[in-house]
Amino acid sequence: MPERIGDSFQEQTKYSINGIPSGAMHGPQPEMYKSYPGSQRAALPNPVIRPGASLWDILAARRSHRKFADRDLSLDDLSLLLWSFNGITARAGKYDFRTAPSAGALYPVETYVVANSVAGLDAGAWHHNIPNWELELVRGGFQGSNLSYACLNQKMCETAPAVFVWTGVVQRCKWKYLERGYRYIYLDCGHAGAHLHLAAEALGLGCCMIGAFFDDEVNAIIGADGEEETALYIAAVGAKA
Ligand SMILES: Cc1cc2nc3c(=O)[nH]c(=O)nc-3n(C[C@H](O)[C@H](O)[C@H](O)COP(=O)(O)O)c2cc1C
Image (tube, rainbow, N blue to C red):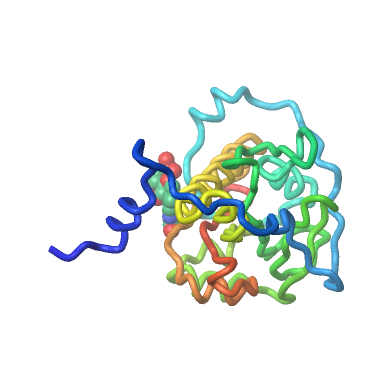
């Protein structure tokens, strides 16, 4: 039987006791942060942690929610949701450590928010600029219908007040881990998704993760080229219906 791409990926990215591929960290380290100079910007409020249910209660309560109430998401909640996985919580040397873990602290995952109805924020696709704690507009205007189409007609992308789209900037991780880096990019992104899901539950909001999407169409909405940077994972968030 011919070897399938997934099987050969798994096989060829194994670490073996007989040797680990060499050639890592040649050339300058890629930029750790992406930014869109000159684009429209929206400041995010400082994330303020609120008292709430215990982590154990949140874990027990979490479910996927695909129907949302007709209510805007507040900018305070959006900021706190972003903080749950992108918040910088420690600094050491050149490293900014975040709320969610990352292989080698390389943080190859970028975050975009497709804002459908966020109070005080124009509808559009926004990039999260972490060091400035602000949003940068990458595509103005209501993108919910485009995103719904790109996600195999999953209507929640249109009805949720906010949809998070994560991408991987591949070279940021491959620089150190070569082809195995792909595994770590996916794992990093899974951590981000889990943090967001639990944070949404902690705020009493509904959330549903989305892995079923047309890659090229999602990339087009956020302006990713699909090679150096490519869509990985999506999550719809809003008040539960
Ligand atoms: C990687 C991944 C991809 C998913 N993709 C979708 C999706 O495209 N559409 C959807 O409605 N739910 C999606 N889900 C949600 C799952 O269907 C859901 O987590 C599962 O049915 C278990 O239900 P629960 O989350 O309520 O416990 C996805 C979940 C994960 C972890």
